[in-house]
Image (cartoon, one colour):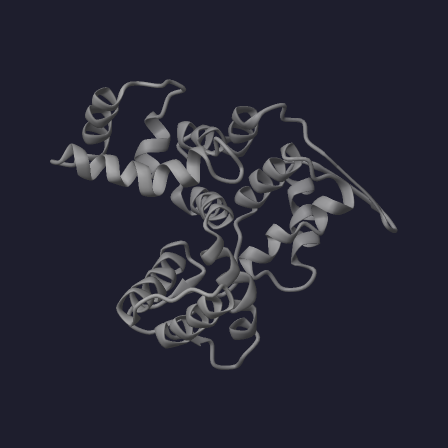
Length: 238
């Protein structure tokens, strides 16, 4: 996905040109395999997802050549917002594990949760498909740093780099959230941050001049000097 984000341009090539480009960028021997990667992952997440045209949000980070530790949480945010099953698993299931003494998340638990969700929707998958999706959920969350471990996966210590937080705050602000709504935005829950952590991150981002944060009782104001995503990425790079 990062390779595609780095090289993506606003254009509408025909299928033949697009397959050639995808094969070149992804290094896939088969044009059909590259096109399948585009259709199943890149298109629904980074072009038609929520927010739409999310590659525009991420490309400035890639151009600024920021460390993967800073870039990864933004890719996680884009992916989870565009993948309802992944988002609901994070919001509905993981907080309970994060608060428990034993923080292991098993594929069997994800399997059972998916089964319940399918039942509520009046749908049914085969056990093989359900288990494959359950394992895929946990593997994705491990790759994004929300979980940790190999065969046994656990809730990772909650951590959101300050630069990632500032960029996400700017993105949410551009999407219409401001003031108290930005502070209490539900997307912060995706990172399993403890109570009070979001306000502390706003204060730290203010101290580092990534944004201006002012609070007087219930009145909260957040301003950004950056006018677009490229300016914000450049500020983080500096």
